[in-house]
Length: 594
Image (cartoon, rainbow, N blue to C red; front, side, top):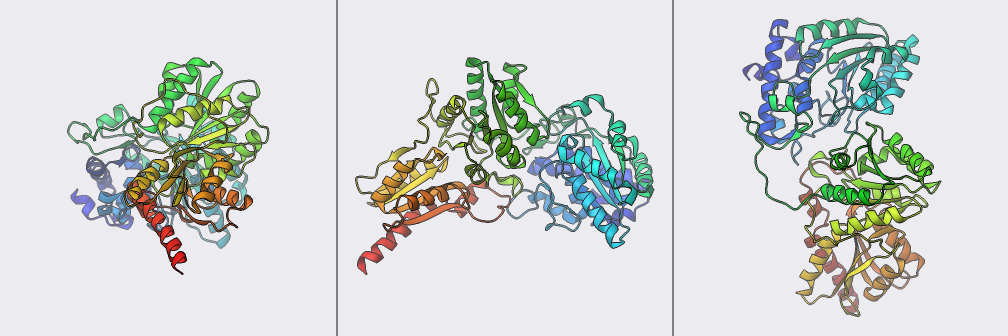
């Protein structure tokens, strides 16, 4: 590690003799392994790009030359070499650096990215802007073959080929390791014809180069730097390189919890109920067993969405389309046209990428596609780019779409069953967390469409009503029980349906209590609380003097940190909900005294 002590920024690396670079790469890899063992985080991807990272910062004059990484999985070494070595001990914590790339974090993070496939588009735009200003700085996009399955990557290379005559200084390093998070899929991966891919779009090709040979990389990058116009360099790396367990199973080691370096044994974690993801996979497998029309689709997230277990049980009925969310949704729409019942399982944050396809290709045509949104709500350490904050807002505004949010995993099973019985599209969301551990009904049933349930009546005239959407309903019940011990009667509603909203239930409870708190783990702007507010206005409850507080996520991008602490900060836990109820009651009592 002594050599790394002398490297505080890439300029220090460039002052080393070329003969020392292999040693620098070895030290960097040891550092990443040590940091991963102590802290966890994204792991195998960055081990695979160690030599490439060293060579890039050695050949190119960063940050004057712009280096753009596709997402941050492969860029932990980049963080070490750009002044964040000590901070890596706190990565993905509240006071530490992001696990992804963030412009506000470092001038070396030229373009922030947590969603794959954006690097070439961003780099082309930067290169063109520099050309227009007469700036001869180089721009390099580093994109993996997994990210290259994204449609944006094709679109950007196609445009780069079109601009070739105007010679923007774009360089693309195509890092082939056969992986995204999981093994790659698709025709390009199967053929391996990267040369044909690039040259068919008018982008000159060089390679392939051994991505773990520093000397070969430097020679190739020097040639790339000297080339004119857009150019692509093809390198081949091994995800997890240098740590045997990660080389053997790069998917398992894509991200890790702390582990023992000598054995690769991960440190034990406390027992917990099955995750929501596992419960969803089990429910989907049960449905697939009963109904041969049901298939599942995901976008390069077989394991993350739980669909790998379903695929093992039902070969040929689970489709991984690669990092191609737009295609996934329209592919599902096509299946639905012919009587298939597709379930599209995609993280909330990634489904944002397919908004137009949901609107135009599914909802407009009332096609029976079911959307299962994993990671709905706060996701903790993955931070701003991955928070499932916006799904309720961006789905609620779409006509013909039923939107649901379960309070527990048993209710989720019923919602999946309900969605598959509808004649049009439906969506439900669930969090990144262990389930509540509730008992499961023997068989799922279709829920009455647009009907919520009263979890706690709070008497004929409750002091306050809490109307909750999704998993926060359990915190609402806990808050109500705490307030009951103080002599405060609280009604609690589990809305179940965000759209169509059970206006009869929420308005009758609100009219009885005259003090209402809505709770959602999603954006307040346009979300569930806004839906309730609209209903209260339509039905005259607001005009009758209703006092309302809406709890949810504010108009900001929520950073990385502990999700439990963040819920408390936004008053989405039992304590915060109870405190909000007390505030409303304090206002009422002050009015009564006046």
